[in-house]
Length: 147
Length: 383
Image (cartoon, rainbow over all chains, first blue to last red; front, side, top):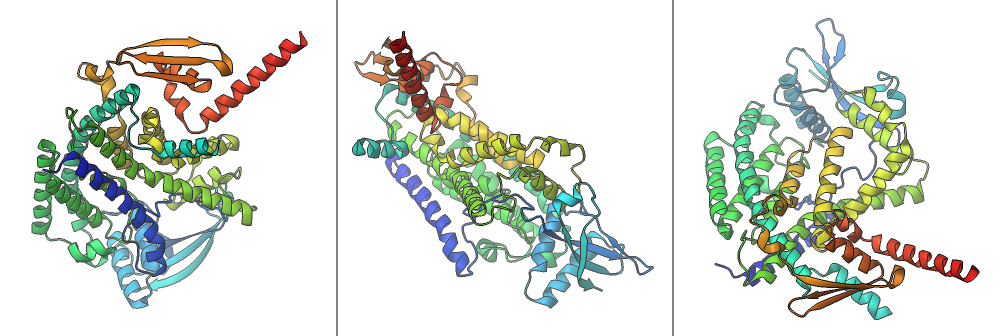
């Protein structure tokens, strides 16, 4: 059984370690070692979302038998919440290995929307001040085709 | 003057207790509340663990190829989607550890095991391309409490014990301060280098943020759009939030602020859930558990800590208001000016006395008293 003084010291050490590890994230990220202690960048909303009035998002489009592509709305699909789909999609889109990326994208698409024969990832660019009145007014740029 | 400022600066960050009987009472209250907070935390953890079964069954349905190792921890302990046997083993260890730490919260071994399991369950959830911010605070809570037992009677080591509790809260709340610093940095950078873009103090900041946030889930703001008709409300709210986040680390340093910072942080999270659609339920619950004033509910049990007998003397007014507390033990405390008013307010049991301890309030109070005395002086000299 530890005595109270040692416990106090140990707790202090934990706090100091936490601070050092937090600051260390600046260094490890620079060295591309990732972020072993993920609390430093807990900077939710350090800028308002859409601050540059040009937000880009990825969306999956599914191909109908007629050859036409329809937008797959972001919502709960099977075990994926809207958040899960959004973040996994943007994670996969920044994978450096194109083959791996397309393979995983295909698996994701077939899982969340199996009713389509082919898919397309589209980059959508919008201005928040425009879409607040005109929701469908945004730019569409197809980026990846998935067969 | 310089020395005075320096010692004030050091006092601001001083975590070890002062010797005043009042501080002693506040510390006892903190220890009392921490005991029940820890109990509630473990009960919450128990249900959280049960929820992980549902979580596992959900994730098991997903294609195994989408399981991605996101960090060092999962590279070692979660190299692939865990088998039902592996999952059950971790769950059993976690449940046993929760039970053991409930019975004996001094057990460092079981706390380490529990922390390991909590990290394991979180990493499982984070292994789909997204190390979500949900769950971080919960992990940190189990991390910083590793060595802090929950006891309601240990007067022998009260000093060290209360200091340990204070460090526990310091470690937790510093994360909010850091996030506040990021906000402040982002704001300053934007205002100085590119003032035409939408920074947090821009009139349209809250609106743009909400529209984009809702669009992220393919939703429209709809009727909520009118909530942004008065930008100044949101600018003020932003400044209040920024201030609250920056000073969060003082929660356990200045104990009168403790409940206020807890409450403010909960409101901040609820506000984010409603207006920014951040799905963030575990953290506000944990903060409610940790910062809840249990002594106000368990009045009978808390009677021992509320006992404090002293006599009060006061004189003068305005800047010269003088307030003295003399305790039975012979110790006395004296206060002047704003501080005297603040202590009087505290002794009168005013619900808002804690607000007067927020950094900056004393400065404003002193300025006010100074101005008031000047005006009185000039009035007198005219008449």
